Length: 465
Image (cartoon, rainbow, N blue to C red; front, side, top):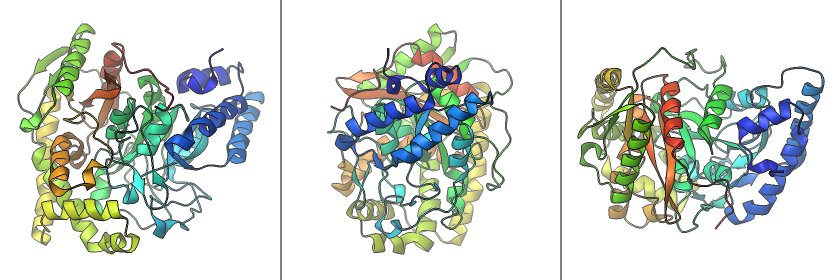
């Protein structure tokens, strides 16, 4: 019989619901897998086996009573250490938050529990969830299970590494600048950044988010199959009145034409040949599945979106959070924050308000484009996954990385959904593509992603290299 930790969330939830296996058996298998591979990965930085098994037993008891166990009945999952989970520290990779113990679950954790998921543990993130790499002075570095020489991505690098290695079927991540999509890409799995307001968010342990975070930061699922992303999205997106920005949008929207726009190098961004080849391969897969794909040299603006995103985020950090970087004194965070400050001049109040006003114009332009082309196929990154910690070596190196990540940083300003689909390997290094759709049209992304996935993906789960 297939080892239970290898199963998809969709398959495992069905078997548990049918009582072919128990939630306790599935959780025991997942905990054993964690014990076997996490020491070499450092993806999960805190967990309590007794707590996980108690949650599994509760699912089994629900099923025994003939009651509905939820969409994720007994499925082991992980949650990122930057969201509140009752009884656990919301460290966000920071020593200064090591004692910040949550008194209640965040909405996304509460939704996972209500859906019957079993939370295995908490996954690593860089300090302040800032980088596309995952290392901090409190929890240490997370390694990519496919190749320890390359980044596992960030900031949800722990979630991606854990999911790729079979520590849970679904990982929770957050994304304000690529922190779901890029780790999925780097670890050879899939990751969905939903529309703002789709999945409720709030941490009672801290102050409410700045306006940039309210407009751009989301939670979402990482998984080894598109079907599991669909399941994770449905579970995570249940209503929660604690988030005033939550939107009761249906998970399935109206009919749409199966038309996609392919852009290999938006705004002339640098794109490696292997990435371009992956995009053309994905376009061919869509065409074979009945989609009409039109290649375009240009799209609505992304570079301006990326600049305005940095303007809003850094203006707020300079106002209220810059001192925290000094107190934490994490070398990586200080380096990256310094590089970002040097590349994004501080705005005055007028410039800050101009950025918010311009955001509306840019979003309108994108929404009109997406009326004619419901899906856009573009790079996740212009480069194959970077050598680990290459971002802190020099300002010029950081600048080159930032140029390759245009599509990561540009999208969040618009609050649009994006999905990273893993499509293959270049040697042992993963490669994939990104899909973008209109607001609350994650259903279109998932349909297109399933067509691309059908053409093949890297094998997973995998044993660490």
